[in-house]
Image 1 (spheres, rainbow, N blue to C red):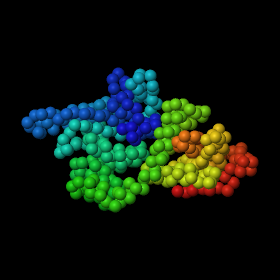
Image 2: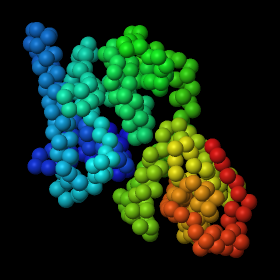
Image 3: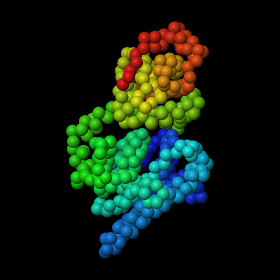
Image 4: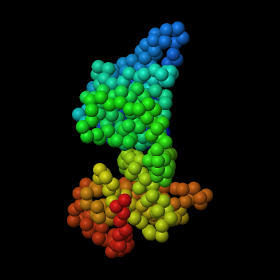
Length: 369
């Protein structure tokens, strides 16, 4: 699970008077409740009995745990982690979006997985193969939850004859589930996932996203340096908020952002502003730096973010990212966060001074994508 749910998102084995669930994910107003069961198929000579026993232990017991956790959350504003000390604040009850996932290990390949509404809300049921593939293909929290939302909405009033979750994933990736006049019964050819992965479109997508993983590397680096090792002079909440925002970027956005990082590292341009991406209220400033002038660079980055805020009136938040190499040649990242809800006269004067006295962004190099 850690490949995707990282940096303030994933909490293992939250606690009440017993374990609430196996994995609990909080991201903005979204909560994902995950129950994992690893059940060995019994050795009865009647395969139907083996299947019924396995489904009960591996799936229905997970569903019961998930529904129980959700009942507890209805009256909770925070949860306690397994150490019984750490408290995680939950989003407001009225705005929560809850996803339920039962991960059932130990089945045989031919076992169908019951999924859907078991009485108190839709539950996604994944096995070993579907869990691995889904988290590899939808490896950002935004892409993953987008899939869960689209899937639940799509199957609500349709009969979907796709026994394998990975075949439904292939159907989703190729159509976005945006079908005009979709029939009430949806089926697919056998081994749709395997067929999809042999297409030129899939191969091109895999090639296109290679450069985007510098963004993931940066998130891990910033998280380890500033949160785990607490090596920052900025207020913790600002660091946390900025890492949350950059972690919300979808994989397709990370393609653009990864290119910007690479360009900032190689470019002779002092700094660049990236306008807000689609459905975003934050912009970016990218700036290369010299490790010998790190402290001066941090101050410059904040001031450049102030100018970027002025230049992008709809983006009240600006994230500044500076990157370079340390003396050993390792890539190093720095980050700052500026949140200015409204631009007033004093702020305009402040930006004007920055431009006139320091020359920051007097000739703006702005990137739309």
